[in-house]
Length: 81
Image 1 (cartoon, rainbow, N blue to C red):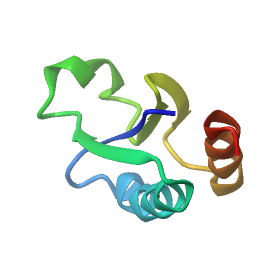
Image 2 (cartoon, rainbow, N blue to C red):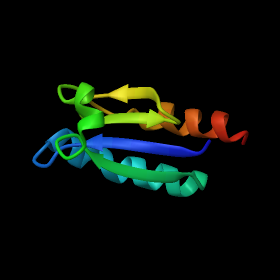
Image 3 (cartoon, rainbow, N blue to C red):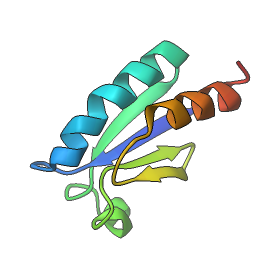
């Protein structure tokens, strides 16, 4: 796995809840995390009504909330571990 992107928005309470979970899991898996603001990046506009969104190598893993067990398993499966 090359990258996890967490698409967020300022003032989004669901984003505030998701971020520490995604940060912890990506750090534990040794995977790069990029946090991107949907309102600052026109390329992410399609996710405007779905934040937070977790993208694993560009593929949607989750929208609106993060299930910790599912993300942990997906990171493990994609990293071969």
